[in-house]
Amino acid sequence: MSQEKNNVVGWFEIPVTDMPRAIKFYSTVFGFELESQQFGNEEMAWFPWSDNGMGASGSLVKNEDLYKPSADGTIVYFSSPSGDLANELAKVEAAGGKLLKEKTIITEEIGYMCLVLDTEGNRIAFHSRQ
View 1 (cartoon, one colour):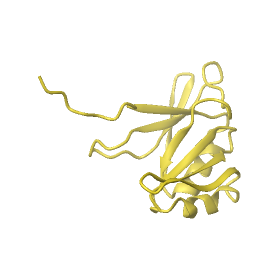
View 2 (cartoon, helix red, strand yellow):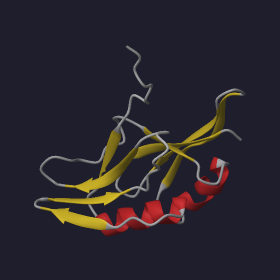
View 3 (cartoon, helix red, strand yellow):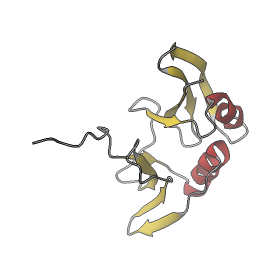
């Protein structure tokens, strides 16, 4: 029996302490809109997703009892919407984030990456082929 190949990550959640501030950061850096919705003690704002099956989507999540921002844990890599992560990286500090690692080549085949700290204290990365 053949199984369809999917990416191993199906969903991610990024902890936040100030949802409006976090939404502003991600919207400014990536150029897409996020809307939040309350679910009991949790507030969530979803990243856009595609039905083509490539990659994984996720959300920002605010719930002080279960989610704590961290610069030391798992790193989510965001694919550059512009195709060159330097464009998104140029917006990070103006949006309240901090540069941790400049645009750096991984390999010619894989492309480039950088590390930033978002407004909530989460370490995240960007990836692009150029």
